[in-house]
Image 1 (cartoon, one colour):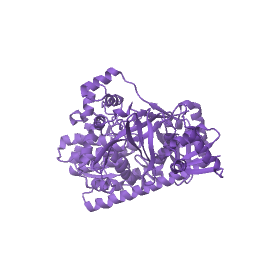
Image 2 (cartoon, rainbow, N blue to C red):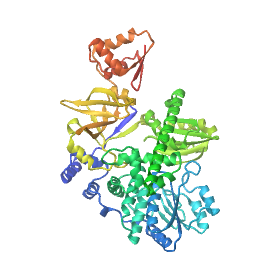
Image 3 (cartoon, rainbow, N blue to C red):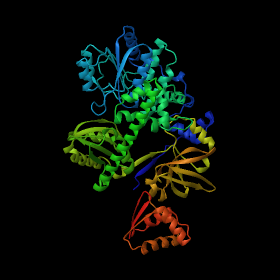
Image 4 (cartoon, rainbow, N blue to C red):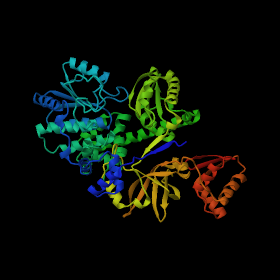
Length: 640
């Protein structure tokens, strides 16, 4: 049975041709737009040509104008304003926007970021106690990226004769907190169409509307930079207002006026001429997040706010070091977890539940994602400290992990999340029972035929379709991110050639795909673990298109993302190659033969003057039921 399944939408040919004609695009680009649910002329035009004239009017948002007027009143009577936000990039960039703007407006304003480990997400008990003891003093509290679930705590703050404005984008419950103003597009009675704004986008919209009253000059560019950072990092759909924010925000980031961001870009080693969404998502955001994961997010806020180059240099270096520690902690936990999974055979279960002592809680979600990717199974990674386990879960499309946790909640202290990701805590003594119950639930609720990884692809494509016209059209769809992913394609009926390992550690794969007279280079970054699947004659290769620039030369290459397996493996191999491999196996005195498959290919071709490939070797071994073998990365183990 295949453990992955391709998902490609079919579209009415008339719709495709209409888009091709109206916008002078290729059929493939038309399919990409339809996959983004862009069908009518106006929607496509706004997507292709983002413009602030199409930015949704902030005044229609429930309580937004009311919240702005409350801040205007606070400015007028010199009230103390406190901005309270989350410790991730979305929270950091939201806090920073408010601090930059309100400081410029002359406000008496401070901020507060809770400690991830000791206080956790949302308005913390620790913070509330400090208010009650007058250790934290303010008149108006503005929460960003949190607050929508804080019914009781908002009531307590109200009872202390202080007022609260909530800016949040998380799902609303049946009861909305009794704050002075609640700005959240997900409220049932908020007419906004842009339900996918994150806190950073919502903060930008709020402050931009506030500025329609105060008219402070030369400030919106900085706010837009920060909003763009938070929007891309928070993995919200890059459509509608989010697309406008990121489209223009990236332009300003490339000539940033934020000293701390400039230093962070330098420290992160970005040498590309143009910073794109990829650089934010995979290079800058992890460094900003590392502050909250490994130390205090306060460092990241200070970096965004400082006007001093020397301080910015020091803070950027601290974030760089914290990110290194984050990667080390992540790798350490991943290695320990994989060792336990392999030793205990946890990969044979319906869901992997693995735990360890004092694993750093800040990276559990990242490790869970990597385990799910490695084993194609839902996973939960739990860190145990003082008898309590705190964990992060990641799932695949066939399993609603939140629903699974609901059905095992008798073992849990608390949990939360959504279909594909969740967090939880439980007593250490219940971990095994919890794991067994989860496995039973998945066994009952999902059939083995349903348990596959879904690969979403924009279109099938042929090698002859890959040219600079298509590449330029695809580039016009940037910025890419959630809801507007970089277009992906499936190539079938192609032949693999010249496969080799590349990179310092040999973790990348390089080869060519050919059909008829055309061939194109392919790079598989970090895909050494997929080697066996690639060598097993996949039904199709899942790729994106990239422009490779080297020493002034340019050429299109494909980036390997995944493969689609055959329903039933089959291959035809020359008898002489089969005899050669069998001869090597039979001559060995060891019961288990261990060899680097690439070196083995070189050896066989040199000894026997043949043209055997790594693909040939795997095909021979897969077809011969009398031989047991395992290919771990590039190392081949054959049992006689």
